[in-house]
Amino acid sequence: MTDRELDAAGIDDPALRAAYRHCRALNAQHGRTYFLATRLLPIERRPAVHALYGFARWADDIVDCPAPGDGAARPGTALAELRENLERGLRQEHSEEPVVRAVADTARRYAIEHTHFHDFMTAMCSDLVVTDYPTYADLRRYTHGSAAVIGLQMLPVLGTVVPRAQAAPHAAALGVAFQLTNFLRDVGEDLDRGRVYLPADLLAGHGVDRELLRWSRDTGRRDRRVTAALREFEALTRGVYREAAPGIAMLDPVSRPCIRTAYVLYGGILDAVARDGYAVLHRRAVVPRRRRAAVAADGLARVVAARLRHRGASRHPGPGAPAAGPATAPDASTAGAAGVRPTVPEEVA
Image (cartoon, rainbow, N blue to C red):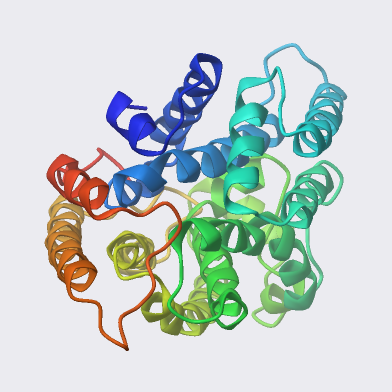
């Protein structure tokens, strides 16, 4: 976390500043698409986004990447400890654990509903015992806690020009769309962890089961039935993106370039999967670097335009002028525009 970001956000306490910096590092290391998109936000809102995604990434890593030698029970113990720490941190608005300290501070600053964090932890805990989903409805119940609530947590930070309840379903859908995209891209890696996130009824409709997926993964051979199932899951995911799309225009104008960039980059993963022939059981689909650079440059141009309009509206407010999001000030927004560079990460993750 840069000092400029923390200063703009009004985060002065040294321990709290260190906590936010730690969250930023987690986001930069693991959530590279989110990290790139976050650089397009007004400078004073970035720490909150890093806190939210840093916490989510940390919990997810406990489930997916347990420390060597911890044993099968260790992730469950670690998640239980994190859940207890989180609940205490949200209640007391403080924690000795840096990531929890930052996320509790963000929840307080933006009045984020605590139920979103509780639902997220419930979903993370279920990953330790649930290894597949019989139907798409079952999967969507899981993704409410694992992904939709992330979009709902973000909404107060991003700000809206409509009542928040009107934008909420679209924000939730965008979180789900991103996660379904990850499920499609990571089918092989998830299978190695013992999990299948593609609904069993969708797979069965094409004559596919876990054993066929395992065979394809192990042998490196393709099967047209698997390809057909993956293609259907891609189409289903694109439908969720369509549910989410109207919500972008409902956001504070200075936040829209960030979310639009994430929307386009993640949608590009679906394009890459299709372009690669749905070979996700054998290799990870990657968005071409040139495409990522073009999207980042477009996002930067939109940031500059939005902030110039925001400054003009601040000087000459009219009856239809949108309200600014939380903690937005014209001078801080202008500084943010100057600090954004379309740096493109080596891979979208």
